[in-house]
Length: 179
Image 1 (cartoon, one colour):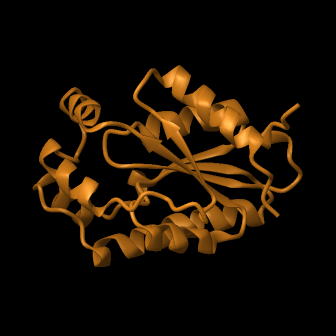
Image 2 (spheres, helix red, strand yellow; image 1 turned 135 degrees about the vertical axis):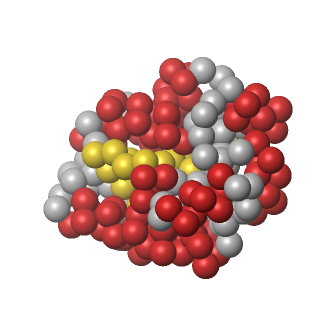
Image 3 (cartoon, helix red, strand yellow; image 1 turned 180 degrees about the vertical axis):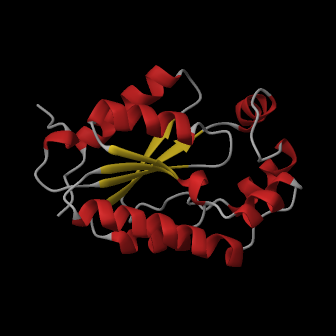
């Protein structure tokens, strides 16, 4: 029988990642609730300048993202150091970004939400967010899917919220707890 990651002795941080429109914030919030973990929407730590860039249709550069990633890593480190587990919604599009987030501690894992292009576009058209649909192409071009040597679980997120959360919970339960 699989052990629920919420019952492991060591605290863990789960980063729900993917491109805009993949459902990161929604799925991360549901996972945090299901696991009883603290929750952070990484978008809440974006400086106003980043939000203004994206709202204007200008993709973020690495220089824009790095302080933001450092702020997320610092929040996760604080949670882990206090003995608390956490779930964070963060795009984490490049391997280098994920490595930077892993500086929060060895207990950082990723849930990569995989969604096909047409579904991403549909979702982005149906919501109000600072990230416009015209930036989807730059997000997909920037995306480096997690490699096999990364602590990442790939989850098909084309379906319902409930199905995606269930797949993520099942996959997390099957992974070995972090050390």
